Length: 191
Image 1: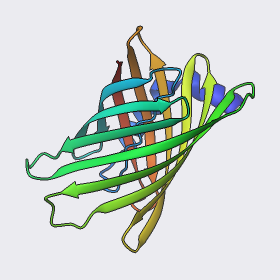
Image 2: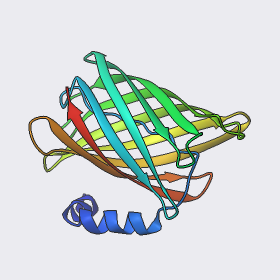
Image 3: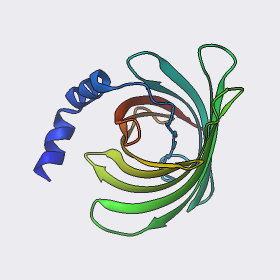
């Protein structure tokens, strides 16, 4: 617990380190999870940064019930012809521990359209949420499947409400296929 407290006190150093260590990763699935208590419907803009380029994602999330959600996202790559898109559906199970309030199971799909590569990824994600110092925090364990290839990613994500209708989202995603990190930052607007 002392390590987690130290990381939260030095979050900007952690983000700077993650930005310096970030690198390119086309095998990245954006799971735009915003809790039901934070926003029932939202739109947002996410930046996934690496050493060579940045990917911009526009996303939407909607809760159908208090435990079932859908999110989708789209991005155009720099060359103007490749389009990345994806979606996730998730089911939340709530429980009442001191800091741990829910676990989410999510199924997703990701594809690169108009690309010579055959990148179509299915994903299974387990998202554990916890709350610390008024910051919603999440650990995502993602299992990704692309044709015959299987790999995993681990994502640490934080949400903080800035104003009544605006949430900032930042985190780090590590992929065991590429052995690389992605730095993620986003702004979410509550509808």
